[in-house]
Length: 424
Ligand SMILES: C[S@@+](CC[C@H](N)C(=O)[O-])C[C@H]1O[C@@H](n2cnc3c(N)ncnc32)[C@H](O)[C@@H]1O
Image 1: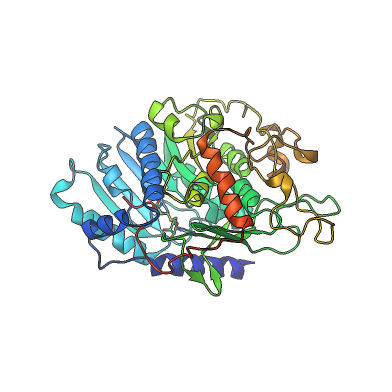
Image 2 (image 1 turned 60 degrees about the vertical axis):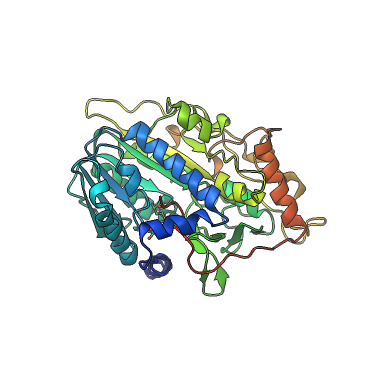
């Protein structure tokens, strides 16, 4: 298992190392990105990160960015009035690129803030002392990598908390495993012009086994590719980057263990516009992409897999509040066994829409606080389902499914390169 973990980390590092294009200066990178098909997604994800930072990090002194990548958020940090930022990442090439970009900021740097970028390979294995504490810790689009095992997620969140000042915020974005599962459907894969998903587990994976045994929410590997982003390219013979399904309740429970509690209301009209209204009052809030009509709908699907989160570290004298509201608990229906009649198509009818009301036996409600001891087998309580919305947004999702059903696999990922995923 330890060897597996090392292999996975090496694979992730190699993947991100390959995607750095240090020959480009920031101006060239931005111009190249503006012509990319995925520009609306990149811009939208940047908008979300910018608004999160403006809301929760502006006016603070210090920020630690875990899994910082190539420094795509440097221009956003430049607007916050910070004094110091540290970025750490497993990829030495990305760290080098982030340092180069910060140096390139030169006279455009607002105020006297400093930044350091460092390689850190053991955030999920060893205690990390980032010379904090920091007012803000961020982890954008990367915490799912620690879902390889419960131990790794625990160590990662321990490291977040130990580097975060009491009262400080832990801010991030993360893809929701439940939506990934839904989109993969019974086939365990999705193949649309802009988004490709492929499961990489055996047996029932994240679904309950036939004998009713509950699965662990950890260790479910899949491949994920959004055309022309850092997730594209190939890993061996498989397209996309290797990721792990991430679920919300384990994060909430472990974060609570380390004294961090989710902010349910961001109190920000700017963020409200970018996030699904149905996420109001919930700890994880789904992206609400609204791309121009000419953009392939599968790009919005790729974006709407993601959620934001903000946790606050409690003050020493503060008591942990009850972790309510209890999270509605649904997963996509487990796929029927392959031998079942009428299930040979790529998408199961009842899974046609990801956000419909729960069905079947998995709708039991979980009180998160009470479930702290249940060995984090939290697959019965992963976030909220959503009523079908007649608006254009969910039309995107339906249209993307139709692409898949028609076997339309045009627009293969472009292999190496092509702009950063969230880079500014
Ligand atoms: C999708 S990128 C996001 C980069 C950046 N946070 C952003 O928003 O642009 C994921 C990043 O996580 C980093 N990463 C993955 N596993 C990691 C680990 N175990 N420790 C540190 N960084 C890791 C990768 O090298 C990559 O830079």
